[in-house]
Length: 376
Image 1 (cartoon, one colour):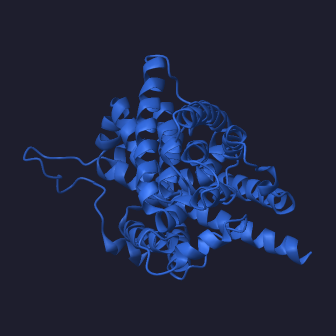
Image 2 (cartoon, rainbow, N blue to C red):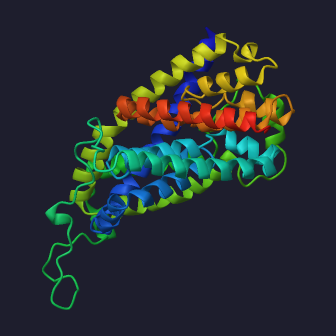
Image 3 (cartoon, rainbow, N blue to C red):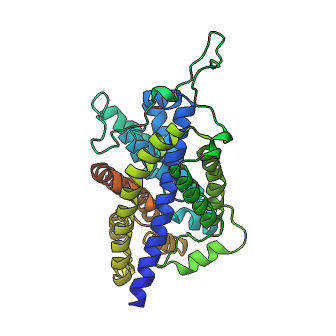
């Protein structure tokens, strides 16, 4: 019973972290869309190659934050399938923290290869789906909308008209805050405090203890805790616009769209999936699958990469770091897996999750075996 409670609360903590990051990013994206009057996202929609590059750069960010951002943009129809696949190929999940600390030179080479493969695959998908790609039917139907009261009404000189009801920020709104604004402020503030004090950090229990210990020695600016601190600092910006935005933006865009529509679904799917996976991994020893057959190891690495969880993939980081497997196994594992980034995608779009995983598995097998046959 005690073991189950530990698994339950660990899954709950990770679910809160993942859901919090996804929701905060959605809040920021809503704000950027309104402040830019929709121009920034319209340009993004019009450049499919630019989407692939952006997706790749997001995926290369250590940890899952970049993947969460890519999923948020995809589910709101701002990134296409090619860009989402590129982000997931480029992402190495939380394993990136361990690799940067223990095998930094090899990790930089790996990230360059992942970025190159991600861009090529993303552009190929765009080429084959040119003028054919339709919006994911499971994507958010509300999209990132611009309402009439969100627009700035300019006079002849290009300035907002004095009598216009333009959406300018003002702290005077806090004199009479709505209950939705108060709840948002308290929620984001609590999330920032939890990040700052390390209350929501991931735990990696599925092997690789010696590698994880090595990763924690000394000051590592790419450590998960430091990136969480950076995210906490960025989240202060969210607090500011929640305090200063107009009531329409708080109620229609943040509360009704992001909180009511997305938060329950992302949390429930994330928590349920994590709990089932963690229980399964606790009672099933993945390491018992491995042996000295490199071809089989590549296949196992790719199949295990389907699991939307950080932890099992550390096995292949450990095996490579200790010289037990070649680089091709680590590369195949990194292409196939995307850490926790697949969880919010699974919550928002099962069809999108299946498409991405099938493509990533195929690419991982092709690239992994190609490197193996070339002697890497």
